[in-house]
Length: 284
Image (cartoon, rainbow, N blue to C red; front, side, top):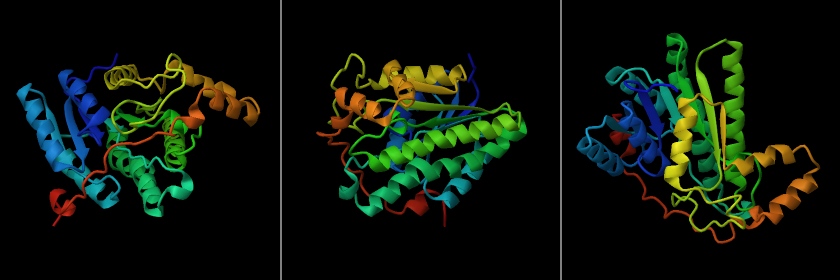
């Protein structure tokens, strides 16, 4: 098991949901955790609660879709705290509508947050990892990056891209004979509020995952340097089903209710618009 005591761990989109739970878990293991998020108030509350437990969690406002902001904040982080040892790309959004119902702006935003941000953060921190011959890049993708789901066209496209990004990066690092590790996480729906209203036909095989249980498994996978984690175990069957004609995959998805999982989707309440974001990011 990898030791993270004293290591610098950056979690994007970590002021709430899975990211917040991961931040506290890693901090309790002795890591120096940095959380990037858009919401300054949530970050302050996170820091306050961490300080009450004597934990090292630092919040920084950063829009991961803005590559200039990512590069600038990366320099500030490295100067103030040190090189990042573990980068966890956790930031993500979902629209939850069919393709024709999804506004163009939301499709673009989904790609910016769920895909392009991966490029900016990895380009910002990977060079130092390669130089120090150690590091770990974690991509929080989704089981929706393994199988298409109606009502999630933009989200599935972004998560398929995230899975492909991780695989290509892993291949590049392998060719370089680098010691930098990668892990891609592909969970089924997690009950964080982001997918409020989704349903599953057979919860025994495809349960809506509990956040604490999911985080426990994610962190274990990271500490054991696993290359991939798919949750629950039954979701691995998608990889096998892809060996069969597509009609078989479609029929199985329909039988297990995946085709109707988003019928009653509500999602999380829209976040308030961020004012003076450039000022909060420390830019003039």
